[in-house]
Length: 367
Image (cartoon, rainbow, N blue to C red; front, top):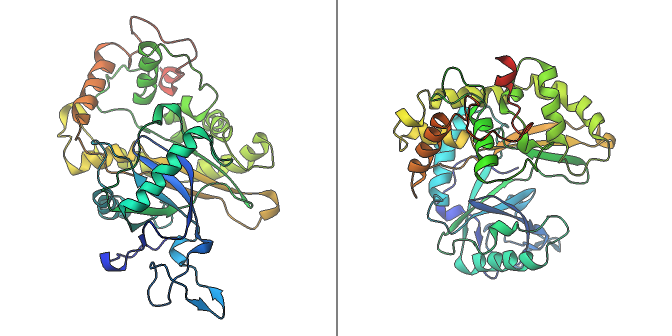
């Protein structure tokens, strides 16, 4: 687990072109790439962690403890993505204090040189042609976009994936409360309304049906356990490393998730940080940028295998990146919200109806 105390620049771990570690592509989103790092070959002097050396303790190479159990996260070279140092500062000052200890994927800032980032970019290029066994390979829509070599920083993050003793799954909770701008007679929440519009405007089919990408976020914080159950099926369908059936996982996870206060806290913070909606708010305001980060985070579940019964289920929120209005994002957010209102996506009165069964929002069942 990474340390949470403040670290001065002089004490940061440095990864450069000669650092003797192996890197391996794991996953990516629109703004960042996550890499596995093989730390067994990192050897450092006792008094100088982070500087590659040949010191040993009783003949055994010394491993930098900051690399154990963590992944490396680097920023893509895109104008709309905040710099790592700025995003990390926002996380430590604005996000972390909102949650109880152990609720978040922790972050530790480290330094990276352009030569090291180029090594990582080469791994991305190689993966486009030859995916490794532990990932599905880079999505084709991500090809050609690489990491920013002039960034200077990256973050080490808690590894919440599956391993020999745990199964793992993840999903994006999205907007756990209705948009403040939505009409009072809305039959879709913000996430379901946007999904319906995209199905029609992008002429796509609900290919993700039955996965966490098609669930209604409002079901995740409903007081009725029976409402949560179908959504949990979708979430667990993409669980990796589980030696048991989804039905058995659900019996284990459903009562845990239903009683877990973390998602309800996330919902309440989304509402608190943006009570008025993007059409009535300055998108450059700190609270609004925090709200947008809270609406685009990832929920990670780490589930002990049956033969690891003494371990506990672990849940954390990650990908809590600063959402700035730069790169025309403010205009985009306002445009999308106005479209959802004017074209009837919230009220399910759109001219071209979304495919049947593609957007079964909890609001439509309650009205």
